Length: 245
Image 1 (cartoon, rainbow, N blue to C red):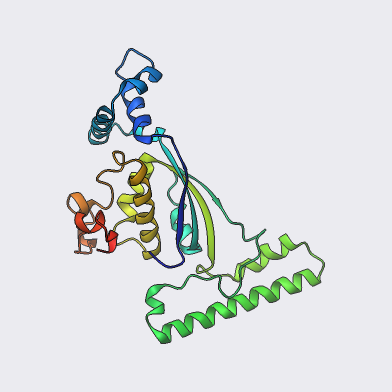
Image 2 (tube, rainbow, N blue to C red):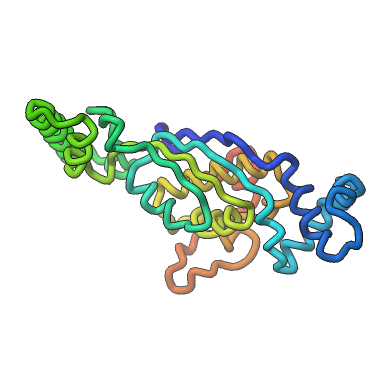
């Protein structure tokens, strides 16, 4: 996991597996959902969730939701994240929150590994930071409101600017998110985020997120000629070492 990335599972549906199993079973039962919820054993819940997932009855999965706080990611990462439309987001505003300064950028590992590249990157970030601060000073000196000044000054900030976001997804969308973003072809930052989120939801909802992740993990790669050629191994991903092996 990148050093700056911090993910917290803030909230989730109580007993997500049982909520989904109850919703799915109601479609074929003559009694109320409340009765069904209490009448199912843990084994019944696990079996039914697997049937729902395997049969493609995925509407039932939408009754379980999970809310995450994500800190220490770049705007480049969140621009990708919000492309997942079946989710809810609240992101830290660059209009109302003044940019964090010299330490407010995410440094890509590939850049950090090359001293010359890192030097170029840091120089560009310092130039952006200095331009931002100067624009804020000029705007405030003109008597404009802090918010209006910051909303214009932020135009010089790069994709590397660090941000914070809260995201809520249901189990159906999370399974899709893990399938495409846990893939090695996903951008490194959102890939790390997806693996962190997957580990958290599997801990509280093991049945719903059984066999999640990129297609290569439990089946064959679906990327065609774009495949990376380096499939994940279950022992690496779900073992003590995590997705890095």
